[in-house]
Image 1 (tube, rainbow, N blue to C red):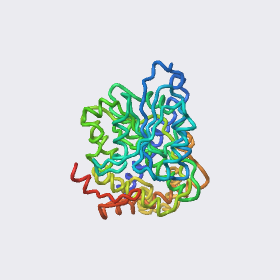
Image 2 (cartoon, rainbow, N blue to C red):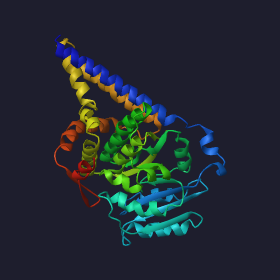
Image 3 (cartoon, one colour):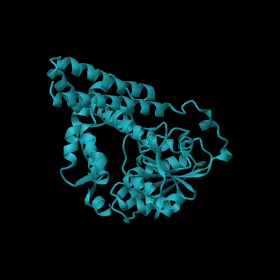
Image 4 (cartoon, rainbow, N blue to C red):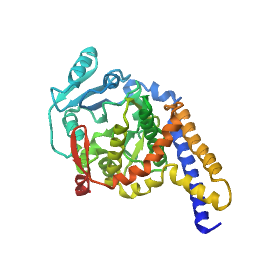
Length: 381
């Protein structure tokens, strides 16, 4: 057995151990505090008032469900500010109806366009940030499904050294195979790595949900500071680290209903995110090409054949261990798991190396009808 084969075997073993460790850490984080009554039973007077900002644009199938969840929070002192660029947007009548249905909720719709940054989502939020009345501010995407204890769970994750608390999206309610693939990306791949990194002290911001203490962001230059990068979560990570504080993730993240997805939608979204990671955190993006099952499986097969062991048998065993870890994580965390999940995990891992290459080809993409350029991120870095 030659040195290359030994190296391949060692790489396959280490990659599998790392995969198991990351899945175990994510499973632990997704269950920690699930049965802690203090999260739900804190007296209302002990909880600070919070401003919840939600940018909206267009009308997607689950928007009414996710937006309604923001009106049904079991939290006494919060204001809900919905931000829209265009008064003629299809989502506006839905929001006005929800505001009328919940007169007891301090909710308002703000309409107007700001162009202070190259980030259209951030521009949409600027008016909400200016109007927010409270010292604690949550920025949450319109497709986040908020449980009734959403705000309590966020506050429970705050520590003395926290500068920002976030939650990765957890895909739920998928319809069709490609929505299953999106769950495979969001849940047992991206959320797994994010929780593992956060647990060892290397948390990264995730723009789906961000809880800020207003004074912290104002000290860094206000909401406009998040426009220093093309992605507001990348800018947020750097803002918090420069202040000597930590980005943390909430222990039990929140669902994002998916519905139907097409292959083109999944590919476009994953390429966009890969390009953003490459532009904003290139050192961390480089090893992503090795992060799926493909490289360890190929390495294990090569090492096995060099030892006159059946490569097919080794690949089958390693695949069972690899995807068994993902099944364990999904089941423990209560994330989506179906008979299609193993096929979706395989499809995702086959896509990962191609996505990595695609991320290096070109510096532009489209997001909700907006043409965006990575030069904006590079220029501001």
